[in-house]
Image (cartoon, rainbow, N blue to C red; front, side, top):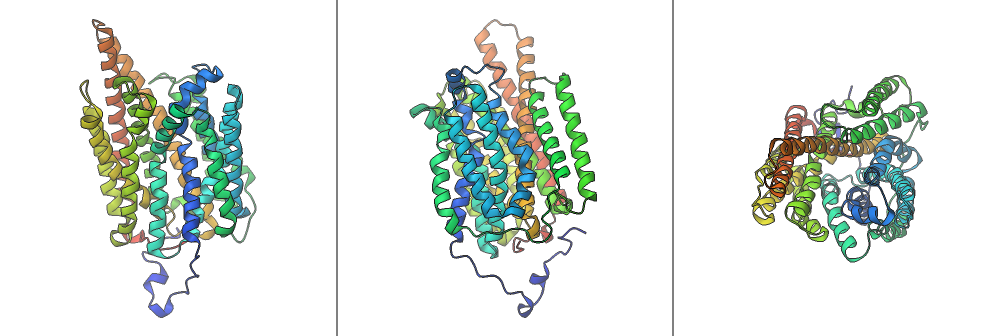
Length: 500
């Protein structure tokens, strides 16, 4: 039976005298949250900070056009593929210890990447960053879950975490533009070093250690199956983008088929072993399972915002990298402000109304971008959509973490955190592959069906047509997430007052 089978936790349904004595609040918990937020921001923004800097890195290191995707893909592959084992290591070895090791390892990998002298060194450093991020990210979220036990404070803490998660991608684009314009592309990697060192100085005396009790044996076969399956899935989805609609290359089919086989074998293994890497109770709970599926869909749809608005700003509007990056500022600011406000409303209204309303707004904002045309600018064309989407998604990111961690046993906090992060990484890879494939097909079809009387005008029209298709598909993906929230989330069983 799922651990959340009771509509209301016993401690909440009992009278005051029957309530268990709550542990004393950690007086350093808010400083600990600040340190965790900084480290989380590093991990999230590193998926996007190199995007705007990529042309400069490509020219400096003589990276071929076919290989440049590995600047992003090497990070995503290692991150998504190793998250589950990273979460279990955090549970068993100690979340504070895993946090510090992941933090310092991430900084060292960033320094190597910034000092890269060729493409192999850069790609290897990015993969190493992803590996340490797979340890750091689940440790960070599980530390939030176990540090804050008072309901209102816990909602605010998840509000901060949700704001960082939601705005991190846009912040990465902005920071990447600033550093590339005024310093050097290498500082998009070097910037992690001073941040990590500053967190590492204060973390040992600020963050409390916690670890899972009981059986601490590692499920090595499960780790191999999960890592292999997730890696094949992320790699296969990435390769699918270059194959085109209806023309999947054999290597892509093999990778995706291997992912299905390996992940199915992983599920069978976890159902039978006495010490699973991912206890199925973590994902079979109705609320948590629905939340994880919706999280994957939301992050898949979100990538339509960053990827194609970046092209629209630089190609159609002619913005330089810095101005293009700053054009995302209202989006990231709106998510941060909304998430801060939502954290105060979570205990009053519960998560379901916020999730449904926020996803509906996010869907509407993304679909609004399909109205962009040749005369659209940033103020009249993009800004209204950014504002609507930022409000909507800001309403979603806080409840996602809250519901996904609701009622989780302390023994499973790290692996639950890892699963949440995995949905975001795999969702991002899925969104990039799917939306880019649809964009390329729409772009090529438009060019083929229009006589090149004015080649430049036709090409700009093809760009817009491709954007419209991608934005519509992204809106459709968010609409699916809305359906999942409506159907699967039971408001009576997602009270934020429940604690880990």
